[in-house]
Image (cartoon, rainbow, N blue to C red; front, side, top):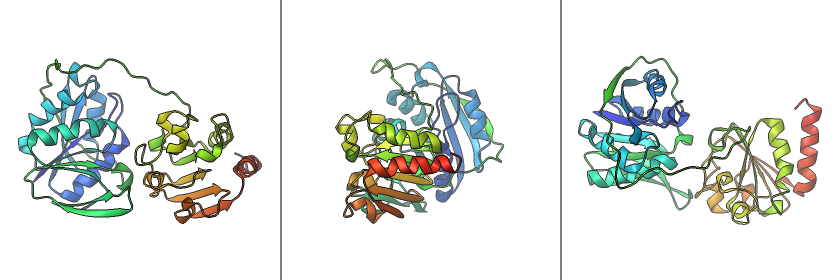
Length: 313
């Protein structure tokens, strides 16, 4: 048995999500190969070769792969797919774009967003916005799987896999990359931060997010938001935590003015420690919180910031 892991990267550095996907691949068993598809991604291929448990790295280099458009990724993956029993990628924005296309071309069912590997053909994935977990057994000869990286341990280094070049596809006439707008911040990226502090509808308006941003800056935390806050225009879409936003599992998650709708809980309930601040003692967020404070956030959060200053933050 052989498993192909498609690396998540920005052509310069290997994303930690890939380390989690390799852990999932280990649960399936067999030789693990990592595909690094990109442009100018030689350093990424070398980093992938050092991952513990990886037997080989396949490096596809070309203009068409720079932004990992679905048509280009499909071509390069299908060219090597016959050699693998399972193909895995992170359930990220990028992975969710090209993996369904690969599954369709291979005429197999995609198994999405898995959170555990029971055996080589049996997996666990969330349904109903994370309120239930489904165990799925696949009879397909070739498995196409996306992995929720926040639920798997990340493998370390220690490997010394060989790096082998594979052909890159020609640019597709069907689609082309036009542009992207990336949010720039000195704070950690939301999906990778060890501490996340999020605001909800209770923040009242976008200007009031400055209250939690001050705390975030003291703690070196990322700032998130509930869908209600995003839909109200308080903060941009890339702040959103939840079923239709980013799924996070930091060491500490602080929910401020967030009631705890099912969709939001699905995106953060795997956090190691959850702290909730809300004036409604009946708010659903308290059902998943390790620590809850029933208080007015406009009083509690500034007091929290002041206390942090007293202990050297």
